[in-house]
Length: 115
Image 1 (cartoon, helix red, strand yellow):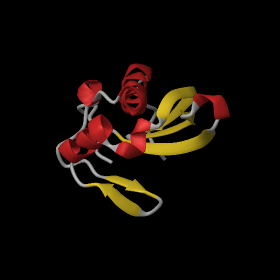
Image 2 (cartoon, helix red, strand yellow):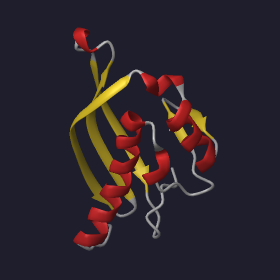
Image 3 (cartoon, one colour):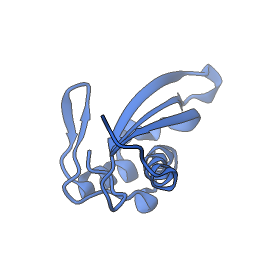
Image 4 (cartoon, one colour):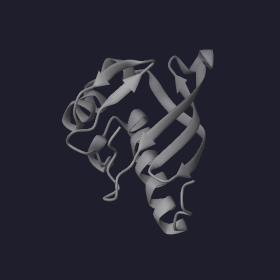
């Protein structure tokens, strides 16, 4: 059983995850706190090998260029795990294409994303 997390600490961890999600749209990772050894896994495949690699992908990755909006963001915190849900809206806007995303973040004591 996980001890109850201080609400301020939980809010900080959610804000850390939200900064990453916001960078999917802005393509500006400067507000994203990534641990240098952070890794990213999507559908079981390792797609990010370090914090700098992930930040570079957020900044220039063609896979993120189609994203123009995030909506209905929500998050739950359980210790260091932040589980998020949101809709990713992609171009062309006229088609109204969107996907529902469930993404989990491991956030350390310094509010850096570890995984």
